Image 1 (cartoon, rainbow, N blue to C red):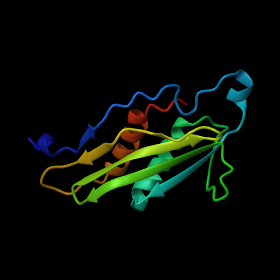
Image 2 (tube, one colour):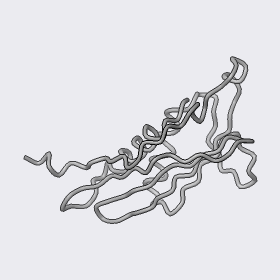
Image 3 (cartoon, rainbow, N blue to C red):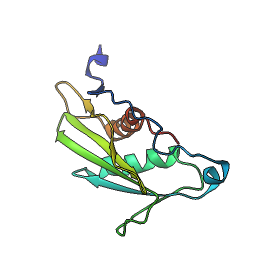
Image 4 (cartoon, rainbow, N blue to C red):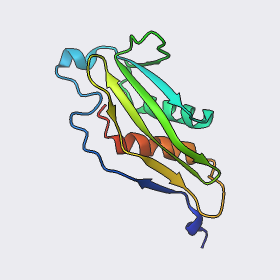
Length: 137
C-alpha cells in the first residue's frame, strides 16, 4: 500500500510553554491590533510562505503580519530550520512578545522514506510547528 510513503511528522521534544504567545489579559487588549513580525532563518521560500499563510489563519482578523527591521512589532516570531534535505526538513519556532524574554518551541520534522518530500510538506511543516509550539491565539 502506498500509505507507507506518506510524509511523517515527528515532535522531537515536548516543551510546556505556559501562557502561550498571544494570551491576553483584558478585553481591551483582545481587540487591539497587534503587529507580528516573522523571520525565516535558513528556510526555503516555500516553507517560509506556507508558515506565514498558516500563521495568518490563526491570528485575529485585526492582527497584521509585518516585516519589522526596526524591532517595533508587538510579537516577533522566527522559523528556524535546523536540517533540510531531499527527504527531511526539521526546525522550530522561537518568539518574543515585546518586553518579555524569548521562548523556543520544540523541534518538529517532516520526513519521507525512500523519496523526496511531497508538495504538501511546507503546509504540513507549518501546521505542525504552530501546533507543537502551543501558541495561543
